[in-house]
Length: 168
Image 1 (cartoon, rainbow, N blue to C red):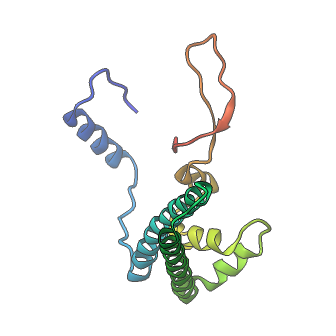
Image 2: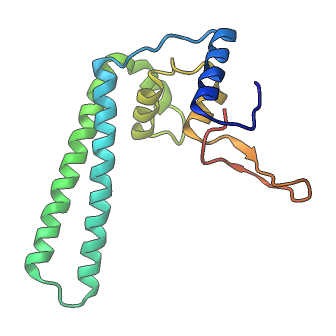
């Protein structure tokens, strides 16, 4: 890799071209319909889970006030019940979709202590059944859990820690 003091679009394009010429770059594989739907469902579920947490916090805040409005309290309870129902529906749909193509992967993952159904579903979907990565280190970098050493200068030593961004 050539280092340069100047970073422009043109220099970036040259670096990318040089990389592509010197390395075999795999062709992009588009998501199939099941993968695309699963990713959409995960994004929607994340949105609903955030709303559910906000609703729970609002409900708690109203209870702490001492004299919560019955209308507000009931409305928040209905909203919470609706969000719970939507999340359960999304989880059911995700399970149906993943079982269609990756039942064996799902079974193997859930047999690992500490890996629940949600984690297994997520891992199978984001890794396309573990076909997107050749090595475990690539997956770890992708999800951002690779131990790295952070240093600044030569007199201050950084401690190893779990990184927040991929380094590979």
